[in-house]
Image (cartoon, rainbow over all chains, first blue to last red; front, side, top):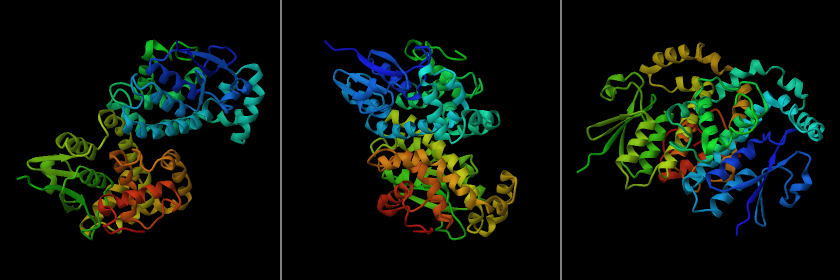
Length: 232
Length: 232
């Protein structure tokens, strides 16, 4: 009998507010592979709980006695371990082509952080607040308040930087074509993260990127729509 | 007996200086599909020569009585018309995933233009000079001289904007994995364009993007290396 997989999933003060852009990729990847998973709400400071992974960050997936961390590694693990369920990449060529999407998405997380940083602080668990503020302010080399203060002015540039993504999603429903693959889940992560944590409207309603995001919210029985979020 | 295909290929004052980022994609795509092609040097103002395509821009491919224009349309045409030669996309999933690369590459052309615009002017054919200057200055809303004047200051930002591409090419030899596919040719186009027309060093020599570019220069018997260029 197979044990249900477990996923350590970043949560806020409310255990249901799941807001890691990287964990969201993994959750959709698991759903795509028809895998059921028990998600365990995890806070930034609970490093000990995932120590067996050799990592201090989530997502961390536990599959039997296997601990797998890093969203790209997890996606590849799932693809190879469960070859009979639908491919995340659309084949070997697709796997290599998906790597860039994953890296683009990581860049998007960094870009969007400067818009939602303070909103995140307002949602993290009490025990995570000092850790979050200190580590992120050190990285940003400024206070979270200063970081986001001019976000309205920077919004047009952020939206303009998404033009290739927008153009692509104007011509096809998903990045992978008629159906989503991991490339979609990877790039969806940052938008879902922002949506879960911040009322700030990164995208206009008629933006093809937002319409694509909404299509992904509908996937897998509305899995990503079911959790606490803004504009839900 | 099959007729050799013809490709209208943007040329400078020297007929061998081929510098369209979009034509380069097509040339590598044709080589990938094992298709021989006669390239016809074409200048910006020779609109009549390609009028049969319904287009005023190159690449324009003539295959028997078929006129095909637009680099993405041409790539799809070649993939469908010549299914027995190596796939440009690595299959149907790969085709959809490649669209974003093509759009990213178009954005790169716009970004790089503000670095090499004046160098292009110095290489275009005499009959194209006024057309090129007028059309591009109108689009840029400034003179070509002013446009490029601060390029040294803007170079770090351009290089930083390529971080996801760089990271990807650090972990795999080509965007499509161990061998290049159309995604590689699409993104290669802007770099080859700049290389053909400008001595300005967009990339550092130890940049994984430059090393990838050099690998593509070696493909197909050095096809893209064989034409007049800088740092060849």
